[in-house]
Length: 275
Image 1: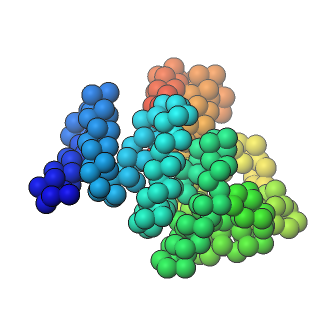
Image 2: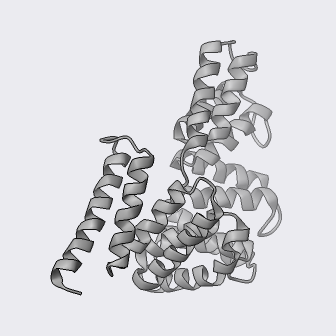
């Protein structure tokens, strides 16, 4: 390939990334035309030999697939190749996709994703790689189910400040996945995960205060944590608040707040999946 042709394909990648950045920071509004333009530019770059475009295209297709399984299969293949060729962020994107997308699409990728994560942990260990590996160890995706190793890895990630890992430790203790159920330890991990910013933890903590399970019942704290969770991105928390304000359950009846949180839930549910 001539230097001029290679330069053109690199320019296509640069243009695609600029359009994506503008959409993410609100400079432009994402629409079908922009989506198609980005897709075309990334395909042009990849076809021209710019392999870095594969990861970008895979992530873009996941965000814009709207549930189309053929598109998601292509995205997984692109992310798998990017992870093999480049590692790093592409490996994390691949593992996230394998963890989050439907099992009927990802089952054939379990072993490859586990292999890529093992390599990343060996060469450039990081908190997110530990969390994703622990998820797969707990579910038996690419590994034999190993509760003890999953917990050890989640604990290491939690010690490093991961809210997601701290939440999983709560789940492990609440369900007895890695030993006897321990409600006291589960509640402690739940509080810590919520304070670290986990929207799932905030929602569960709000539910615990609402019901009194494991802690003293406190409707004021329940509403406070539901609000924090809704702002942090929890669809369930926003939906719960809409119901509470719409019925006056635990709060003063407010149709305005009912509508506001219902809209918040709709907005959150409409957000595209990102890997």
